[in-house]
Image 1 (cartoon, rainbow over the protein chains, first blue to last red):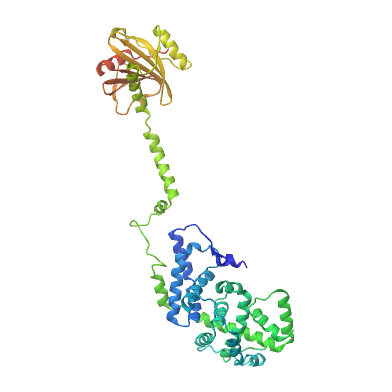
Image 2 (cartoon, rainbow over the protein chains, first blue to last red):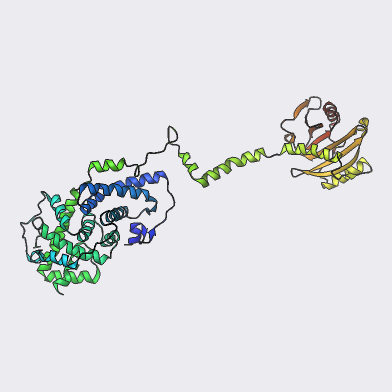
Length: 204
Length: 269
């Protein structure tokens, strides 16, 4: 997939310039953007971990997107474009622009040590295990909230937002390999938190 | 391959992000390793759980309302009239507006171009210049000689209208060829005791008369004469066939009109 065109901008250097469009096009763009409201809210909610913050993030994302809608290349991935605006705003607000606050290996290691993942990998919960739908959403959000942001963001984008690794890497401004390794480590931690809710069945 | 080396690839496989040789290696390993197979299944199950939870998470109505009412996102529409006019947007585009302006103005400019008035007025202006000696004229020994010179200058296309004005003590003394509004005009100068008169002959129609000229219809001759003046110089224009004749003189308008009416007749036969 051509990630640059899919996100509607030229790498990280600058936005693709577009000729001015009419008010009608702006209206249409706004309506199209509104179809991604639930998605943006989910991402914002799980990034910010607070409903009020999430609402502010999303509203500001729309304002910024409409302020710059002429830079969006029609036919490209609007959802990814909006998500990137949202994520940039989140980083600006919560980390004073510091992107990808580095995860100390020791922190991750510590988490992993206390994590029963190694055992889980060999455990077979059996055919009776199942996903408890009750409170699921709350549990997932709670478990995601316990993850360091560096692990949480790729999971939110890939698992909740249905983004490819490449798209997630573009939104997060990091290499694709980083997305993959942090997904692996993040899910390892998450599985530990959610093991009651996640079961597997060994194929017959 | 060791399980440690494969587990990150197992994650990628569960996301359907593995292709080529890596995929084959991992799939082979999974076939032989129950632990990693379990890991794979857990990854898939976890993804499903998260996805299901995500699907249940909707943006609050309150947020939707806030965005719909955010003027930065949905600014109030600017309507200039009771109903939006589709063509109004034309004027918001400078190039289109300019093109439209040119399209509208071109015919106006064409219609307003100083066409007939300038030609008719040029006759008066030329008369004044000739009488002041500002225009070079060709003197001829006889009316016939002058006529011949003028006819030759328009390659025989048409001849100057000639009048016998001897009863007014005027006789043709000179001629010149002028260009009015791109058209060749034959000018004959009459002089005598009664002053001077110029006669202009050119190809044209009655539309060459100035719009403000007074029209006089001569029922006997079935001709219309147009009289107009600039200052003390008077002019009478009439058409004979495809030619226009303009008589210009300082003599009183009634006299000039009477002269034109009495003498009007095709003369270039």
